Image (tube, rainbow, N blue to C red):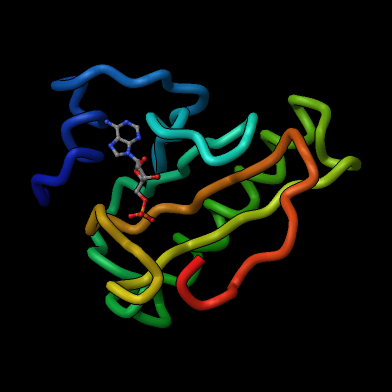
Length: 117
Ligand code: AMP
């Protein structure tokens, strides 16, 4: 297993506000939230970036997205809306090299994708 901060959270070596866990993933609140709701969905299988996920592991990504949607339904913001994001490498601002899906919600999120913003 890799040794990122997210692996340490999975192994309960450092604390996190865990909102969901199953055999495939863990989900916890982002320590520096960018929206009123900001939860990270992290697979237990090791992949540093999206580039490292082979076609035969596509279900890993699908399960993260479905778990995020289930969380949105459970918390009641599925209809008001939410955004899921996965950053890959430097230009996207990836800082933790274990893939993870950001779930952002709880307010109008505005436009995104402008260089330098
Ligand atoms: P990324 O920039 O896509 O790699 O996202 C990494 C995210 O992990 C950032 O939004 C950080 O705020 C978040 N983060 C870093 N350390 C922790 C931690 N100990 N607990 C929860 N979230 C964290």
